[in-house]
Image (cartoon, rainbow, N blue to C red; front, top):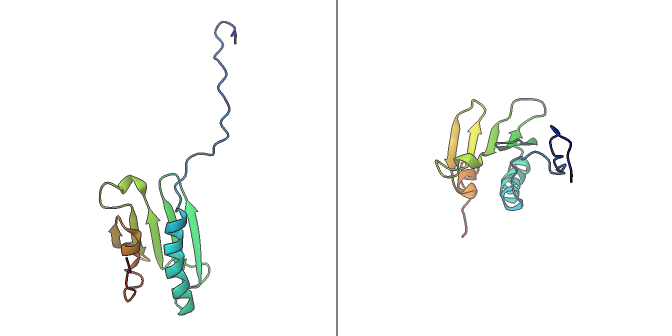
Length: 116
């Protein structure tokens, strides 16, 4: 391809969307299992998911249109530090953080036993 003097070469147009962080299928299954049990017990009623550039967020609500009771976050940049998963309460306090999502989710459902 020949370019006129002072003209920059054309860049290929990328069809990819900007990078976002999301929960994978296994992670969503773990989260939705806990969510389903809590809905069945009448404790939780709604949820929202947000997929941002640096983190994925699953928010749990007791009623529609109020602040979330709990926030489950996946922040990959913390993977090599204190762990990429965290559960935060309504006041913003981190209840549990770690590398294993199943163990982190136990803070929401403590009587649940993990079977390996």
